[in-house]
Length: 496
Ligand code: NAD
Image (cartoon, rainbow, N blue to C red; front, side):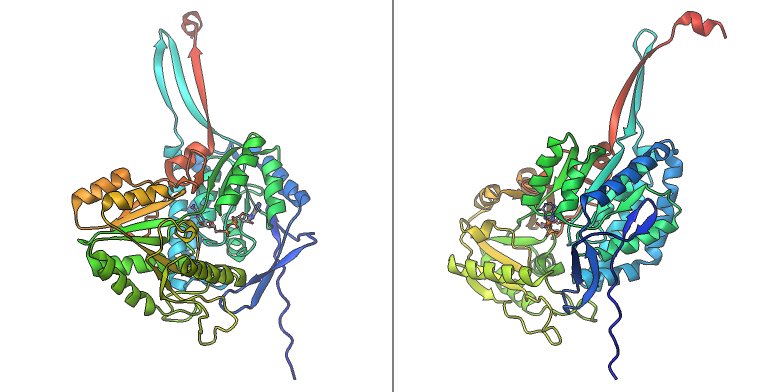
C-alpha cells in the first residue's frame, strides 16, 4: 500500500500580528538545493497585500514611537533568549532551504543574535546632544526620532542573518517594519516570526510579506514607507536605490561583489591556504564577502597555487545536514548552470582549469545543485571573468609582479565589498589598509565581516547610499534628527 505524501505547506504572511493566508494567484516552490525536495510553497503577494501590511505598520507606529526606548528593547531581550534556545532548529531550516552546512548555518545565526544584542543598547545609542547658551539664555538640543514605517528586502544567501541586520535596529529606534525575505528561502523568517510573536511585541510592529518583484515595487512606491534597506545583487540594488529615491525615500542598498585577496610571499602559507579556502568555498562561494580572486606576488604564485589546489580538492561536498560535509550545493539548478558556464567562459578567455568542479558526482546528490570547488589559474586580469561576480565555489588566480601592480588591479574593479591581504609584514599591511579600494578590509582574514557594532561598509558598486547597515550607522539611518532652539523669558521663571 502506498502512503500519501504529506500536503505541502503554503506559507502565510504575518500582518498585524496574525499569520494571514495569502490570496496570491502565483505560488513558488521552496526547494531544498541539496535534494530537489519541495519544502513548502511561497506566495508571490500582490500590491494589495503589501498595502495591508504597510497600513498595519502605520497604525502600530503611533503607539510604538511613544513607547519608551527601555520598554521597546524588552521584546528584543526575549527574542535574543528565544533565538539562543532555538538556534539548532533555525540552523537546520537554513541548511534545508539554502544548502549551506549546519556549522555555517549556526554561525550565521550567531551573527543574527549579535545584532539583536547591539540593538538592545538603543537607550544609549539613540541619544542626541545639547548645548546650553548658544546665545545668552538660549539652549539648543538635537533629538533623534523614528521615521515611521520602514521596509527591508533581503537575499537568499543568509536567510537568518541579513534580516537581522535591519529588524532589531529598525524597531528598537521606534519604527515599525515590513520585511520581505527572499522568496527562495522564506522558511527561516517564518520560524523567526513565530519566535517574535512569543516576545509579546505589539501587533503590527513587525510584518512579514512574501513575494518577489511585485512586492518590492509596491514597497518602493508606497507613500507611507519612509526608508528602504536592501541587500542583493548590484543590478537590483541600483534599481531599488533609484526607485526609492524617486519617491523620496531614504535608502541603503548593499549590492554584489568581486572580492580580492593579495597573497605576499612572506605570508604564513598553511594559514593563508586554510583561511582563503574557507573564504572562497565556504557557503559554496555564495557569500558576498567570499574571496573570488587571489592575486599572488613573487614566489607565492607557485607555493599558494599548489597548496590551495590541494586543500580545495580535499573538501567534502554534499548535503549540509550530513556529518563531515564541508560544502553544500548552490541555490538553484539555474545557478549551477550559470556557474559552470562561467567556468567555461574563463577557460575560453585563456584561464587554465586547475581544479574542475563541473559535472560533480555526489553520492545521493543526483538531484542537488552541486558544483565542486574549482580553481582557475592565470586568469587574464582584463578578461570578463576577472570582473564578473560568479557567486559559486570558483577561485580565480591572477599573478602580479608587486604590490603596486596588485593594487592597480584591485582599483580596476567596479566592486568594493572586501579586500584582503596575507602577509607577515607590518608595513605591507599598513599600506594595504591605507590604499585598499574596498570598504571591508581583512589583514590575514578571509571573511572580513564587520561585527554588529561596526558598519557593513561596501564601496563602489557594492553599495548605494551613505549610511550602512549595523551599528551606529543603523541608528542614523532609522532616525531623523530634530534640532530644538529654546528661549524662556526671565519674567516668566520669576513667577514660581
Ligand atoms: P537578488 O538581487 O536576486 O534578490 C534580492 C532581493 O531582491 C530578493 O528579496 C528578491 O525577491 C528581490 N528581487 C529580485 N529581483 C528583483 C527585481 N527585478 N526587482 C525587484 N526586486 C527583485 O539577490 P540574491 O540572488 O537573492 O542574492 C545574491 C546577491 O546578493 C549577490 O549578488 C550577493 O553578492 C549579494 N549580497 C550582497 C551582500 C552585501 O552585503 N553587499 C550580502 C549578501 C548578498
